[in-house]
Picture (cartoon, rainbow, N blue to C red):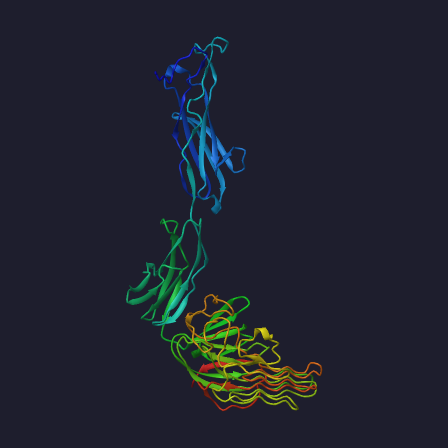
Length: 554
């Protein structure tokens, strides 16, 4: 059987139309910002030139993201043109700005539109002379597919900050950044004086040797064996290409001789946040109170070396009631050695407790008692210093009992003022009946490490929020043991409301609440015996709010 694809048939319509061919397919566009333009060129030709006159036209139908688009669309511009190589069309897509536009595809479909013509050439198109070219035999013809790739955009949301550390102590630099589109990942490269750092290990610049960790991550940890100053920057780029390259602000690393430096972290449990400061004890003492370090708890630690410190502890007074005065707060002075990077926590500085409870990791090392509130008939009892019972109220309110050094029982008693529900008590703990005071724990049981024993260390970690596996962001990785959320520092007894009796003061043991309009008893002080205690005076005149003052031993 003969196969003749181009048989001639006597008719004024040329059945054998032209063949469409694509000269130019749309091409992928990269690094797109705002708009992208695509071009297509198509030809129409007769396999046998005698088959007709190429007097028709070529049309383009453009598709964007799988949809037919037109010049009437708000973000689309289509322009046709003719060249020596064929009929062309351009598609411009504007408003490309979001990650959703990345990877979208573009293609076109070409068609041939025939038109009438006459024979012989130049004669009028009339019946008998009119001719018409047939449709292209391979139409519609679809182009190759092109795609859009957005230019990677790197945004730095948090710049690194300058650091001053002692010789051989770690400085930490952190950067927060993002990249769009998300098909890219960010690569980090930290630099010292413009020189790229290794991911980890030693790096020498001039006469200085730096020890590096995280040199190609979001967080750089770096130390130096010599007093020096260096410029720190972080270079960022996409993971699969060299551009764009963004460099952070330049900040200074200052390495100095070892200082008597305290780092302070104050924690806000409700907002799951921390505030971070430092204090060089060479410049004088540090006072920590709720007014200057508000929050649920305050951590402080020796940042660069062991420190021999002296701490004055002040509990707050009870509330006055008309002409009657609340009891004075207990005070004490202690001395001990703070080991480098060992966790110390002070809490209870807020008004509902008003007595400083000081912990070394998991252990309560010292507390002084708050004064009892006055009633409508008389004043409150004074709080006790370390190892001293709380003072009794003038009539029937008993101060918190003295607990011998290191003899706090492992179970605790919430004071009757606490209002804690029975369902919230952990096994072995109780709540005192009104108006009695309670007794604190030697080690907070906490809610943050339910599998850890109360007096057990938890390892080198950030500070953990109560009843959570979340840490306070940016808190230090140091040896810790304090377990937040359940410590039974709410030891005050509740005064008789009906008669306007005063509440007792909080302490190691809380003062009893006053009855019949009488003032409440003061809270007691305590130590576990791990610190040196100076002579104490029961209620020596502390009439300001709870606080501690830290200084170097003279």
